[in-house]
Image (tube, rainbow, N blue to C red; front, top):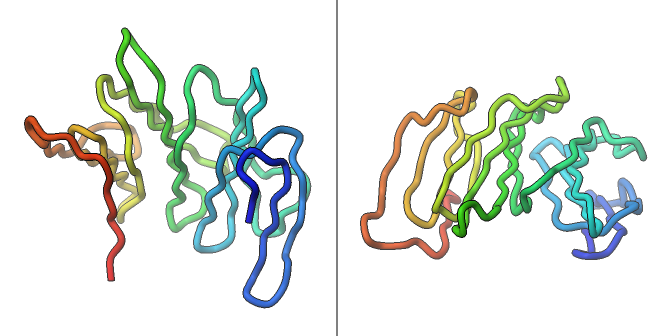
Length: 168
């Protein structure tokens, strides 16, 4: 539970509070993995940072990454809890552009950077075999861990406004 734009967040299980902490800067959004890893994006006027906490939720993040020249809008963990896709928006040549960063939190590194011009990222998630499904307003694409595009389906003249990939 967090207050968007606030500095406090609480991690709760079904029966108790696991952590209740504050951040130095305002919280933009947070995402949790199925096994309890927490990705938290904070921002001040001049600085945006991704913080990843392991399930102990200690005051020191397991991984911290400064974000420059883009606006993060989503994050999604792989089931291994070590791979994370961070989706960002920016403007390039007067048009909206998207950037996907494929991160490994156990190596403190960016594995791949995927830049997509003239497309707005709507959703991204990991599929099996560490492949990333990215849904944009103009097309959907599948990427491998090196950031190489494996498949693409374009919507033609249509634009997608929203998407949902949950399964029953």
